[in-house]
Amino acid sequence: MKKLLLFIGFSCCAGLLGAQEMAVTQAQLPEKAPFAQAFTGQYQLAHTPGYAVEIDKDSLSPDFEITQSSLTRQSPGTVSYDFTAVPFVLGKSTFTVTFVLSQDGKEVTKSEQANPLEITPVKIFNDKNLREIRPARVPPGWLAWLLVLGLIAALIYVIYYWVYRVKNASLKIKEEEDTRPCEEIALSKIDLLLNSGLWERKEYKLFYITLCDILREYFWRQFHIDTSADTSVELLRRAKNVPALQPLLTRLKDFLSSGDLVKFAKAEPTENARNKDIQIVREIIRETTPKPPVAAGEEKKL
Image (cartoon, rainbow, N blue to C red; front, side):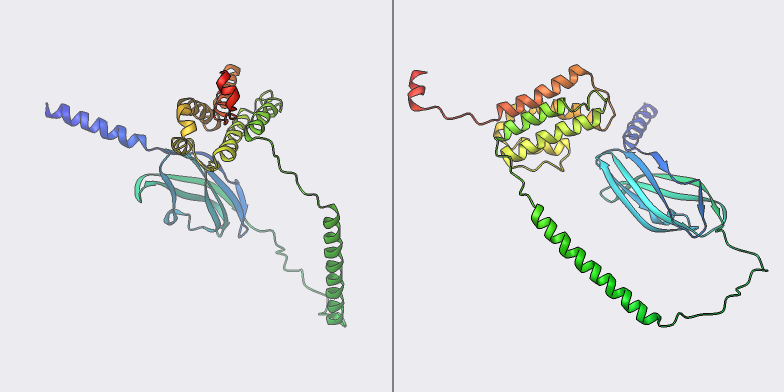
């Protein structure tokens, strides 16, 4: 009986640990790089949402010096690590880096990446018979010529600045603000999206990103809530505090889930699924549009 309980407990723990995953989905590094000359690289990682990805700096290869690096979150479950490195070793080498998945400062798991590179020597002249035969020569009056060139460059800059300024002032056109009701703007943008050709070109991800942006812009115009940088979960949390959206939370959740599958899981939606999602967005816009006030005389007739 004890062995059975231990086995069940071990299985549960293993399941919990396996839920926190991280994997490198793409690595872009050159196969060859010149000695002491910078090259760029990139790693794409997928991980369990809600966790943070960090770089173990002690794991970086000692044969390379990292001059620039950045970790950029692409989505709640993907990050991009871009870097610029300079090799200081010749021959075959290995660029290594370890990614750490953590939550609340506690390490959950690691993923070490090792990519082989061949560091080639810089092309130089190595002929001992070559020698400099030209005598050292300083151009006469070089300081005066340098001053003249500086004055010419300054004059060109001043002329360009004034011409550019006058040209922009004459061609400046004030952009007209769209004064239509926000629901009319949103519905017209949906029609433009359907006629854009994105769906016919099978650019499903860009199609759903644009559709979601139309809805987010409508929320800003109608309810003054900025959801431009929110995830689907954060957007739903904000919608719960808007009385007009509370009856529509189920439909809004269905639309956001469908969009996330296309944008992040690379799902290919059917035309019926697209029409259903378009219909949900239109219903949300129409049902949250303020109704015009009814006149007193018309109310009595009703």
